[in-house]
Image (cartoon, rainbow, N blue to C red; front, side, top):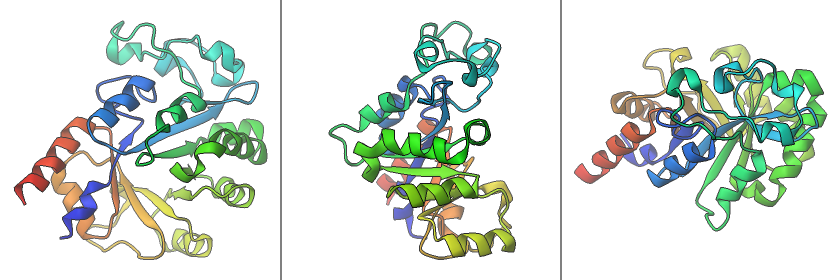
Length: 251
């Protein structure tokens, strides 16, 4: 097993086990733990500004009714995203970040990469061209350190046509139908939930790099690396980064 591949740990929504997901403290914590690949989610506000949040409905992350689409960015920036069901009032005052605020973490740190997933609900609400062009405009100064992702194949086609940032397709299914599509598309990254992979089979090889997500244990990460995964994405950032660091130290 080539353990060097295990260096590539992706923090899913930052250190979302210990902090509210997709917030600046979650991303900063992941970076402090030595992770250099961050994954985040993007929707557009009512006035077309990319904001960092997974659900367009606000209830789970804010405790409030309504949708991201009901508010301008200036209003969303004042909404607490403290995940009250998970953390109570522990993170009161924590605000929803704009995408440009997270991108500012890249300043002076060329080793950091952001995987930016464009969420389906925004594509439906605003249209593919508008959403993709708005995100591309914001990441323009940082595009060498960003990759645009979506489960929506049309969205990443547009990302490739409209910009020059790397693209990644989030697979709904690991099957021959999907394989024909991504072999034609040739994305730089392919994302897949490990539960959708056939057991023990080597991953299909090509010019892309595999990012396998929902990985929470070192044995699973090692098994995936043996099968051809380049990155493992996790919410258990502290546990996984410590485990991988221990593995390298032991070698």
